[in-house]
Amino acid sequence: MGKRAFEAKCAECHGANAAGQNGVAPPLVHRIYEPSHHSDMAFVLAAKNGVRAHHWNFGDMPPVDGLTNGDVEMIARYIRELQKENGIF
Image (cartoon, rainbow, N blue to C red):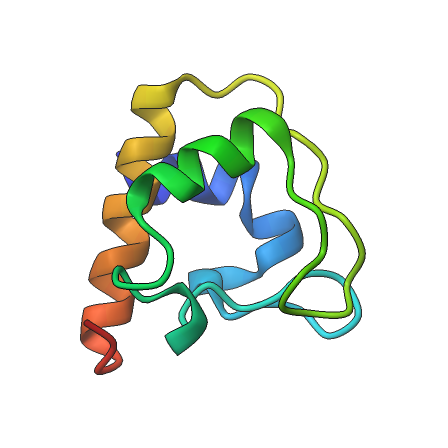
């Protein structure tokens, strides 16, 4: 479910498999987003409120419409799975 929600609402900017897109949005499969630095709640808050640019030079992220907290929690689980597959815990 998280993968489907990610593909529907996040992949347009953050790329397939959360790999990011040059000049558009950062990769979420990256050490900066490991659980000890960005909690799952950080993903929920980012989707709900948007985020000021602070780690990357992509500009601010706007809020994402049409996602519930539960949707974003599932997306975070999907991202954590991808991170784990890539050695990020």
